[in-house]
Length: 83
Image (cartoon, one colour):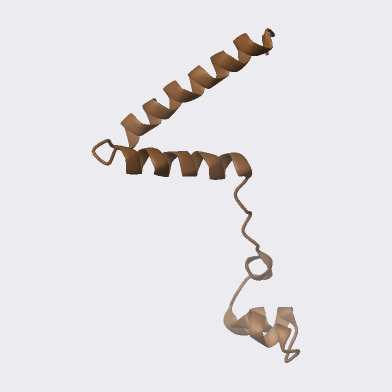
């Protein structure tokens, strides 16, 4: 609501915040976008959850950890270097 007033040049952000009882920091807050790693992890959780609807969150997490360890181990062996 305050943004409409400010973008319509009806008043300043400070005046709109004062009118609605908002802190200016709250008005200026912009949520951060999820990073790529987090998006991939959420996608993997959803896929495993759809593949195994009978499993709960804890078991799916264990399954993903096992898969990740296998991937890391294969990369390390293939690369021939310890990271």
